[in-house]
Image 1 (cartoon, protein in one colour):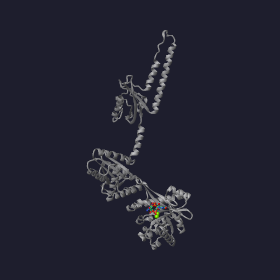
Image 2 (cartoon, helix red, strand yellow):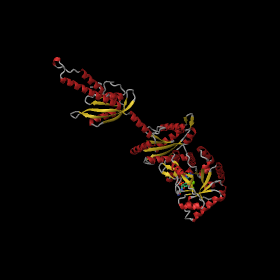
Image 3 (spheres, rainbow, N blue to C red):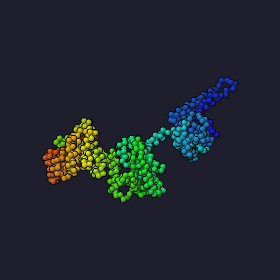
Image 4 (cartoon, rainbow, N blue to C red):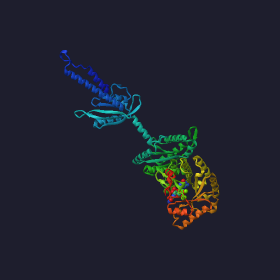
Length: 612
Ligand code: C2E
Ligand code: MG
Ligand code: MG
């Protein structure tokens, strides 16, 4: 039998009607009510009031909590619904007047009906508490998510009698959770899985490929020259291109495959369930072809290509990190050989070459990501103990290898040409920092920036330096460029012209590591330079090794005769300081005064001075 419309409010109302109309039989003779009758009436009235009050409270509490309740009589199939439950379902309270389980099933999302029935059946059969999330179709046909929790109640003979449950609208919570999930796991630009979800998916794909004895292809791809597209057409167009590329890539893979974006213009595709490498190569070819088709964005016809590196499971690695690393290396190789091609990872690649490639690759990304930073080491005048300058020194916070000193990566950057953008970044950052300190009212000091020979020889360095000063607002007198002897000597005539331009601009130039290269005095005389830096290898044993002491003295003399300043680097002890001061070299830099320190610490030194 279907239960008649029954909410708790309705029950309360019914009680009220019954009691109001119920005639308590008059006693015989129609005389006034006996005391006993009066007591019964009073008791009934109080009970009714208490019941009404408790029902009203319950309804209010349910409303506040947005929680409905229901009871299902197992034997009869009767379903009792609270008013709040009608509201949760987007229905007018009492419509429909009769609620059955069959009707309820029609309001549950078709994909969740089986789960709901199973959960209810389990509760009835085994007495486990009911706890299930499911979607329902609300009165206005919108979809909401609810959670029902309930318990089984038994009759006196111990048989399951009814399920008493609550239902809560959890749509907002689920939406918030899925938004968080979306933020954690997906790339906000393209909506594709991000690096973190990629690792999870790859992990699962590896497990499945291992069970089913199948191949897995990991394709790492990167757009060729995306940076220049971004720079010429702007970031908005660049972003649209990245989205359009994602759409084309999705069209090349199956629904069961994963396409992720790692950031920038890097994508990874996981191809599962492949029988042969040829299958993977076919997809790679397809990708190259669709990416090479022109894109039409914001009225621009954009041509681009991509390079693809492929690693396969199990041949090229058995875990997600190794596979991604090898796909990355193969991609890098594809770019090196000739762009717009794909390349399978090859084990023949020598380990050292691999390491270098990795480093080179991550250096590129590190520059974009901001993994590089500068530390500053004070240069002091030993007579006054005052800081008159500082040297900016580069550091790399590598995501996997930790903090790397310049010796570990500058030679590589010089070889692969990255020293150019890296060097420009150093120059800009050092000038901007110095200007910021000056604007804060800190003492005015000169910042020395190291230039590599590659930077010196390759392009219009004077223009780069001039525009950096203009951009950062730093006055030329507060910048010094440090160059090594060999850098200057390489194309001496050309370099004299460049150094002259620096001099005209008001920038000073120091020769770094002086004494280690071959120094031709006649040349030195012609170079418009300001300062010699005695290499720290001579300073180290200056008080114990007579040869080093002699060289240091000679350098100081040369400086004096050429009318140049001289500074000693690598001063670590008081004895070294005293020797140098005694020999008229008063400018010093070294651990004795301070190690190179991060910008914030250097500002403190500028403000409070050094204590040695
Ligand atoms: P450098 O220009 O001769 O810099 C001085 C080096 O000596 C720095 O090493 C500094 O930390 C270290 N040093 C300073 N005081 C002492 C001391 O008292 N004792 C000892 N043992 N060492 C001291 P760092 O920072 O590792 O730099 C090494 C080299 O890397 C630099 O030698 C420079 O040639 C190069 N470098 C650093 N930053 C840059 C940069 O931004 N661009 C270029 N092209 N080269 C850079
Ligand atoms: Mg230097
Ligand atoms: Mg040096």
